[in-house]
Length: 397
Image 1 (cartoon, rainbow, N blue to C red):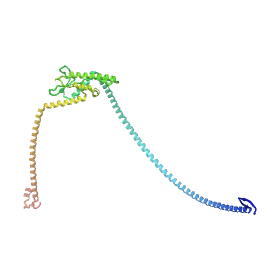
Image 2: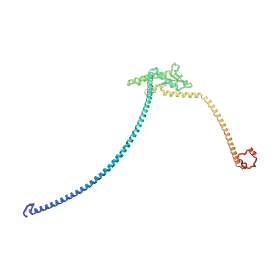
Image 3: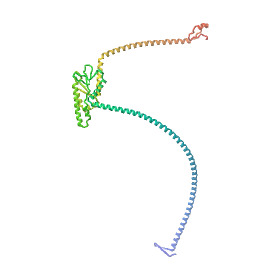
Image 4: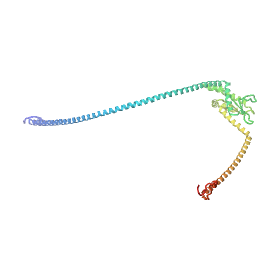
């Protein structure tokens, strides 16, 4: 046993020590195995108890599930019954609503058909109006074409300007204040002369305007054509202004100025915008270029002057009429004062009458308050004598 078995480092290990170590190791192994078996048995027992508990919980859960399933079955039956009733109610409501919708839809279709019919009839009426308007537009177009032809013809255009000027003058002045185609002493015939009040000479109005060059100026598309048309327009208007100044400004017979009538506001505006030198030249030659609105203004001023002159001429008659009017007013005032005196007398008489009536009323009240006793007379005498109002005869009948 003491024999050397091996060397462990520097220490010798004998057989007895080795057997002792092996026995200790075996004992420890057995202890470990016993502990392991005990633990495994305990684990198996714990697992068995846990499985038993789980089985009990599972049975309890299965019972609970069965109860819940039975309750769910009852609830499903109840829900099925409720849903059946609700479905029947829903079907009834849907049927009623469908009937109402069908009824409303029928009424709506009827109303829509009626409205459509009315709209179609109105549309036909409006189409008839549109057709009439179209016919009028066609007629207006023909009139515009005729007007264009009139403006294209020099004589017709002159008649058009003459007509506008005559309409403005005739609308603003009395008939004895103007004359068309008046002949002057130099054998010229202006388009219109307006007679001013008093010893003042008449005012001459010319209605001729050179429109060809103005139309060419407006329709020119390039600068060269525009300059050529502008030069021609200046020459035509200058020539026309000179003719008016030479023929119609007669000293002692006509006014010192004459009016040249332009029958269009747009022509007048273009003339002032592009040809200011022509306006200045006409002004220097005592020729005033006027548009329709300016001619209306001048006619209104002349009308005011004529009316004032007539009023001055009739001032004496107006004074006499005013004097007569004042006498009538004075006479009316005297009569009003006399009527006021009559009303005062009547008021005084009414006041006196009221006082007398009050006195009589007071006396009647006093008489009514008296108690008078008289000897009884025979019945015939009492019936023959009328009793005053309010008196008592002692004994009542």
